Length: 157
Length: 315
Image 1 (cartoon, one colour):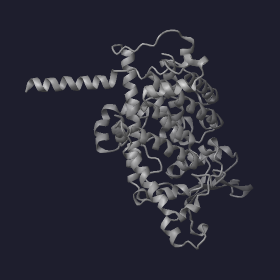
Image 2 (cartoon, chains in turn green, brown):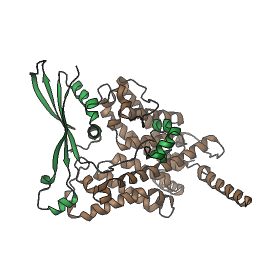
Image 3 (spheres, chains in turn red, cyan):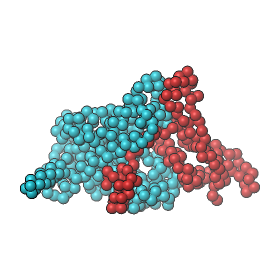
């Protein structure tokens, strides 16, 4: 069971799974062991702006701008702060989780919030080849920044 | 012909029986229990600061906790039996149980209860987990069925009973079987970790380590200067894959076992220091005790433990 479940979605996993899925999924043997794989992630963090508006769309208070995690470059390595990095990645890898979990969470933390403007900032680390070839270019200029999954979500009342 | 086949089957049966039930492994299990539970205790203490993520204000509401798993991976039993409002105190109970397990004052039912709570926290908020949480909890599950409190434990300190291994008792058979499952699980983890990496283009290309080591979200050191030594990344990337994929082979062979285990210690210490993943590294390194020779363990502990506390390691 533990050998097959390392790749549980394979044909063998699906074929044999009927006999032990109940146990494997309950015990936690169903984990796929992918650390830094298939490829290591690039620098990413969430950028969001919270808007407070009345029923006509007029701002009732100043919008608030945040990054999640707060130290967007992850400079705080204390173990309890680092968990927020993991939470951010959990949200970032599946856009459906933004609307399902992240937005309601932010709205709940900010009473009176009506809208949340969301964006995932991705700083692509240049390839080693590129850095070696363009060695006279400052490294920061080689980083490519993109804002993905931009969307505005309404807070449920 | 029939006799040869019968003899071979008999021989195979003896080999398998010896492999599974010939010895109690008390020393390895005892030291492993101490190391694993101590690391889990440390992780849990630090997680107490994140306990809001298991309460009513967490990112994932209690009612949707299992929705994050696809149907394929959804657990059949919900282990977080406590209301969200009790997360803080439940986590504190979990820490106490881990403390008892570390000291060797736990028992099979109590360790299973510790595992149930650990698994409950894993299910309650999957987003906030480290790899170390998942791996350590899985190892705790296997460990719960073993006689891991018989060596290097306070229980030994207070008890004058001799520890006896009886290969015919179900309790000892269960213990040794789960000891082998622990070893097998470690092999599986390493192998699949290596295989998964081979699916990635940067690991195959030999530059994955570059992406990891210059990502400030992964490392607290400025390692950009290493770009002047690109061979470091190429060699490091391939060595990582070779180490992981072949771990089970090299550790199974007695002659290469010490080399691979020391290589593993070095590998994980590097991960721990450079990537700030010391808890993960310590969980992985603690499992190496499962492959140490009993005589070596006795020798090392005999030297390290003062005479006054000798009872801790008596059998």
